[in-house]
Length: 238
Image (tube, rainbow, N blue to C red; front, side, top):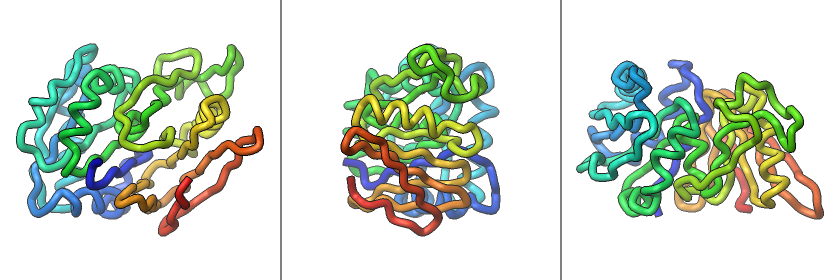
């Protein structure tokens, strides 16, 4: 199991960046080489530069781009001797398609390295990853703008780094209902993470840091229960 998993719900508030990226970079060690996985839709280098700047503003580190052309699968060998992995944001179905076929190799590589997922990278950290959609059994449950080019809510295999389903941009995009639908059907717990907020899973402890909320959805007695957590909170085991 990886030394730590850090899931960021999106957002670019520079003031909170030290809190959001700090735990991940601290686990990566002194002046770490951080592999930044970006699905390249033609502007991969430009997108990489955004995350490289965010990381470098928080701590001394060496971000390196790992660009995967849209529609292709990640070659784990491209991670080489990096000390940590950041999976960046973008079209979530494309990220899932790029990493799911090599998930076992990635988990092995991450056995002694920390993982950070931003937006799409957070969603696909789950065993069962919600990749998008705005309808549930044909009925709208969230705004179409947050559908990620999908119609029905879609759940696909993810990296299997955490045992709960993950939603991102929760308050900003209104994605909590999509999480509730997925959790209600699967019976597995889920977390909906706001922007500028990180959920860190280290040594079995799940903690929340940032400006927004994290909503925990669990199923019991045929109903979905939702609990809300904010900065400094620990989410109980489930």
